[in-house]
Length: 337
Image 1 (cartoon, rainbow, N blue to C red):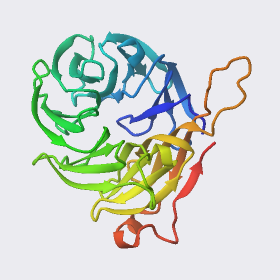
Image 2: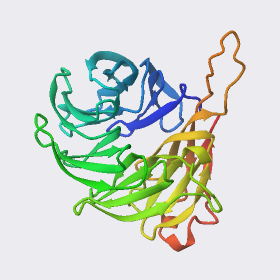
Image 3: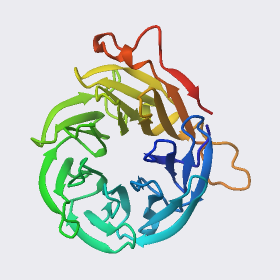
């Protein structure tokens, strides 16, 4: 299905009935059953950050080129901008506290983790992250924050129980240019995509230690360049789905064994992946999609970006990791244009 130009991120409504997509100039609400766009709001100069309030009525998006974060109201039918908060140096990833009162932002310029009052935009507190933080993820109880720091090849842990005084707890060294983060349902394992070393690292949260690193390079590759940039975990935490932008594929990893199960083909340059709550359907945002059409009166390149909906094998066929995907129930492309 078509989506607005160059999608960056997905975020789900709490009831899982709506999938939100941030693109270069907008935020859209998508029907997860059909992939059809339900509503869209302009968000000029948008970037990676996208987060939904716990009650599902507010959507927050990074308006990075203008150093702001916007809040959009969602009533099930329309997206409407209701606030715009000054954030500072190029906001990237966002997260909302479990009680919905605090908006956490990482700023790529200046290298900091910032807490804003989610209603008023008042700056509450901040902590230094180091060079080029990419995204932030909260623990299940909202008391810790995990930040991927690209330039330093680290994931930093913060105590954010007091948003007015966030405090660094420690660092975990990973590989080059860590970007996307995903947390297991039980909060015990944190996975990071190392975009410039074509790998993912699995971190034991309690020990703050890397327990395994999986090489994602295609067989026979002589160098690096697959650009893994988004992650999704199956509900049981055993299958990891990795968007590999430069390979036009989603790689599937069995985290129990660390084995590469296979890959699902995509359109051009996948930038975001997510799963339905039951793990039966995969959603892939393709930033360059099927390329660009005639420029017409403008010389501006505008790729025809796309959203893919892919049905996955039944959960029962995932329980034998040594066999990989069932040969009788292969992944099936639901929709892609």
